[in-house]
Length: 431
Ligand SMILES: *Cc1c(COP(=O)(O)O)cnc(C)c1O
Image (tube, rainbow, N blue to C red):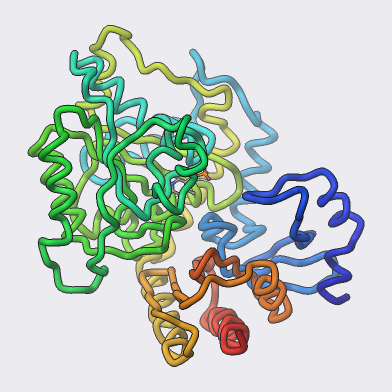
C-alpha cells in the first residue's frame, strides 16, 4: 500500500473527523499514520510496512517497544492493582521508585512528588518554589528567571517559562504571567568557555533577585525549544549565582534524564545539584505517563514549616502503581545494562553518520551529544511533505522548524542506526 492509501484508511479518515493531535489543525488536518503495533525499534503501520523509530516516541521509549521484562512487570501489576488513591494510602511500587530516584539523582534531592505528566511536574516545581518563599515570609519573590530557547511544557505556568518568541507567548500574552528571560546560551557544549555568555543572566539575577523565586532551565540540552547543547560551565555558574543570590534552581531533566545526554542526568556534566528537579518522558521507558518532581530537604522543610503546613498539591492519579512498577523496572533495565558504554556507542555511530550531512548545501550545522543527533537546516522544512518522504524510507523522524533530529531508543543496533541516518540523508540530500 502506498503512503496515500495508508493515509486514507478508515481509521485515518475518522481520525481526521474526530481527533486532535499535538499542535494540529482540524480544519486543515495533516493525515496521521496508523500504527498497529511496535516491537524493538520498529513501529508497524496498518499497511504492514515497518519504520525505524528515530524519535523514541518523543524521548520516551528508551528500551524500544514491546519489551518482554516491562510487559511482564506491567501484567503482574495489573493482576495486583492498577490504581489506588495516594491520599492516606501507600504501596511498594511508589515507595521503591521514590527511594530509587533519590539514590540515582544528584546529591541532596531527597524528597519526591509524583505526578502524571512532564508539564504537571513543572507546575509542581514552580508551585514548590513559590510556596517555599511564601512560607519564608518572602512572598515578593514571585517571579521566575528562565532561558530563551527553552521548553518546559504546555500548561500555563510551564508555558510562561517557554521561549517567549518560539513559544506561545505572543498568542497568550494577555493571560500568561510575565517572567524574566536571559538570552539563549551561545557557547556550545564542547566550545571554549567565555564568561560573556553568562553576563546577561548574571545581570538579570543581580538586578531582580529580590523578586525572583527560582531559575528554571533545561540542563545542557535545550530540547523542544531549539535542540541547543550548551557549555557545562554555564550551568555551573548558574548554580553558583543562584546560591549567591538566594534563588532556587529548578532543573527540568524531563528530556535529558536517564542517560540521553551520556550522563544519567545532564546536571552531572557540570557536577551540580539543583534545588528542585523534574523528571518525566523516559521515566517509564515510554510505557505510561508518569513524572516526578524531586526537591531538597531545605525546600520540603521550608514548605511544610510554613503557614499551610503542607504542600498544596495532589493529583488524582498521583503515584499510579502501574506506572510506578514499570518505572522501577525501566530504571533497573537501564542501570543493569552498562548504559554509559551503550550511549557512547550510539554517540560514536551518530557522529560518524552525521559527517556527510555537513557537506549538504541546505544544511547549516550538525551536532551530536550522547544519543541525540541534530541536523540544523538553513530553511524550515515542510513537515507533511518531509514526513511522507521519511516514511517512504522506512524511518520515523519528526522535525520541527529548521531542526531535523534523531534520538533513537537505546537498544538500536549499529546497523539500524546506520539505516536510520542513511534514510535521513537520502531525504535531505534531495530537498
Ligand atoms: C516534554 C517536556 C516537557 C513536558 O512534558 P509533557 O509530558 O509533554 O507534559 C517539559 N519539559 C521538557 C524539557 C520537555 O522536554
